[in-house]
Image 1 (cartoon, one colour):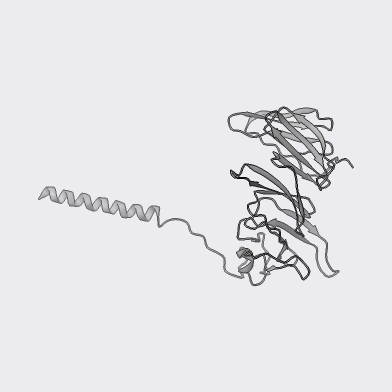
Image 2: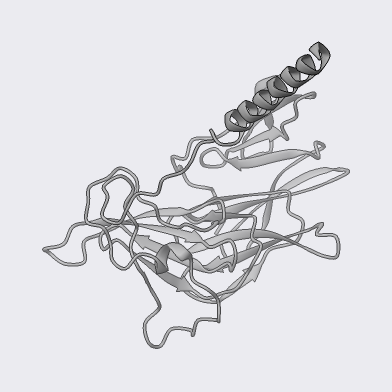
Length: 286
């Protein structure tokens, strides 16, 4: 009898521990509360409009849910504005806009690309509206590098049977036109007057400077390093650093117009270098 009572007590203790563990680990998880319409916490960016008559017709693609769910802009003063509820391509252009009329105020346009379709959208802070400005369909874009004026984005995506081919496409923000750069570029940097394209292989890397339309390509430097990244660092200067790794020390170099390398940092594990965004001119040849 005493043994049966001990077994029953142990069973009750185990049952209590199981119920307590359930409530502790599963029912106590954090929840996300969405601010109601009209709240000043996180206003909606605005409703989506489509291009006017005469623009290229839109394909049969679903618009982002964030635009369709917002009947009208929320007129509040907030530090954050939710522009898109769906995934977007990393990389956007933020462009200052002058006042349209004497009574209006200057604003800012934010150009971004929807990840699902590759369509370009523009959010205007002055009118708090989102407009699809390009219907070019390029699903699966991995990244976008914009010209500072927001007129063109160099987008990159994978293709091929095993998705090993890197494509770089120049996507205009307000039309369906565009052109391809050479495949399998290791890196790409963008400046107002030109682009820096980096091609890498087992024998090293070659950087070419060319106009934003892909013409007048000129080799600016070569290196035996095959795993590097490059960007502009002023007029006729380039920042180059080895691809970051946790176990292999990396270096950063400043390259002049003659292609001479000067180490400025390293060797350090996981090194990543970022040049100032102040434009001093890319030095693109005419």
